Amino acid sequence: MVEPATAVLWQQGGLPQAWAGQTAWRILDTHFSLGFNFLSTWQAWKSDRLRPHMLHYVSLTSAPPSLDDLRASAENFPELRELLQELAPQWFGLLPGFHRFTLDNGRVLLTLCVGDLTAMLRQQQFNADTVYLDPGQAAPLDRTAASTWDIWAVKALARCCRRGTGLVTATDASDLLANLTQCGFELQPSETPPQSGLLSGHFNPRWTIKNSREQSVAPSVPVETCAVIGAGLAGASVAAALARRGWQVRVLDQGDAPAAGASGLPVGLVVPHVSADDCPLSRLSRSGVRLMLQQARSLLEQGQDWEATGTLEHRVDGTPGLPANWPVPGLDWSQMTTPDKATQQLADTTWNHGIAADDPTIWHAQAAWLKPVQLVRAWLSQPGVTFQGGARVAALRQNGDQWELLDAQGQVLTSASRVVFANASGAKPLIESLQTVLPSLGICVQQLSGMHGLLGQLSWSLHRGAADAASPPFPVNGAGSVVPMVPVEGGAAWFIGSSYQPDNKPALPDDKNHAANLGRLNKLIPQLGQALAAQFDAGDINGWKNTRCVTADRLPMVGPLYKADNPSLWICAGMGSRGMSFSVLCAELLAARWGAEPLAVEASLAQSVYALRGT
Image (cartoon, rainbow, N blue to C red; front, side, top):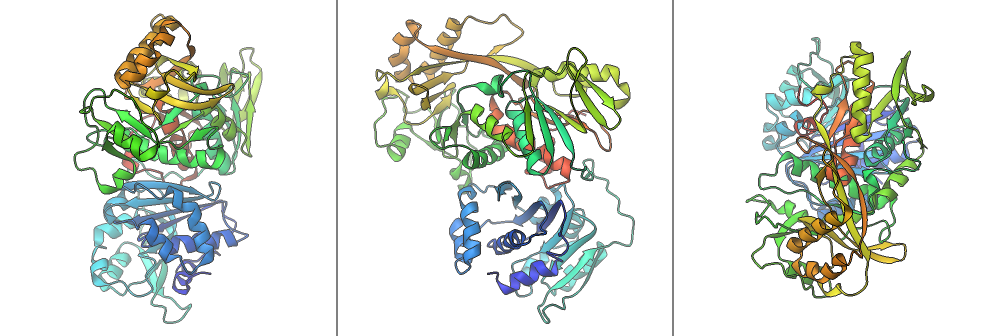
């Protein structure tokens, strides 16, 4: 069942007729209200056998509703209540900025933009197919609401439209109507149903549309074939994101099995980064963690492959970490606490930790441990993705509009219309070769953020009971990390790490790395370090090691390798120790640029991770 006034709204926007048979449809809703219009549009999409493959719904709000408010608005509509059940677990921590929600097996993407109307419009980087201007209102808008639509807000809205973008609104404010007309919108009263109070129309300026934005919206590229080099978190997440959009993706890796490199670590933490100034790294990490937790819930077995445990961060350097005026929604993410308080609230146990009472600690509620190998395998098992192991790509060659990927003997491993380099430090030699062989492309490796490798080693062992009293009931990070209870073959294990060493220096022996991990543990959880010291001294510790690829500014890079109208060579790499926080976000940013989709984060924030951001 759909509320009549809301049904009129999306019907007067030309739906569902307008989106029939389309690859994707992009809706911009300028007032989320209680979410009723989003839910009813989602329901209309589900009920339509001619629906587009992807539905993108971007909605703006200055004050997001609570989950209880959403439930109350859908109380009398069973179909909408069912949809809300899927959205509910993701509805938390709605700080100012963009929030991406992945729904309906990744084919419905809701982007909620929290903040000032004009500012949020200016952070968009897509062209809407349909605009709901202040939807969810059955009666004409009051003058106060209409007054926010000054000429600058309407101009910002117009920049999100293409010629032909449909618009429906409920307003009789003469100043708003005049601004809409001035900015190129043609409106007329709705005739179905009569006296609905709605206006509908489309964007059809009398002048030639010019786009002077530095990062203009490129047209979408045809959904075809893609080759991804690298089957770790970066490559597998790109493959899955593209496959959800209809691409046929072949993922090549020099290893015989997926996640043969740094992504093969036994377990890692999905945890947001925090900083006193809430820097881009912190904001990006929250967006990435939200997306990663969504993927874990939908693809992995909880308790075996991952667990939403939360994480305690011990700030061993003494800094508080969180912004001074951390808003209330931020507490859903992270809040200052003490080890004892966190333990009492979350576990029916005591924890002999030895952390000083005045040491700052932060509880990250939206955090988890996760086995990346299992996630990589799940992504590579998605329809439309093919894994090709034992395939070392030595060179690339153009053949018409296709790229051929060659092995060391010059044999073709595969061909595709597009290629994504997701093979960490292994990407640079291939890109340098292309720069030499095909100078006309304009590839310049020096324009990419510098990358280098960091060797890292985990220390781990099965639980033996000796250190149980000092073992935390949840993961702890800060100086390295501790994941205390992970199911593995043979029982349950703890993991401690990780060491850091530049890969341009001689590798330290394993026992030195284990000792370094124990040293960090002594700072992180003193009592656990003491309890495990004898086991470390006896050398009765297992290890896992590999090399991470990091950039100079510690931010990942994703984007084309050269500037052109339709570049076909892209890179997604440099995630360092935060592959589980950044991989899904980077994949979504790449897919968005290929499909001319709404971005998962603000345009200014997305710019900070673009591969050619230094130019």
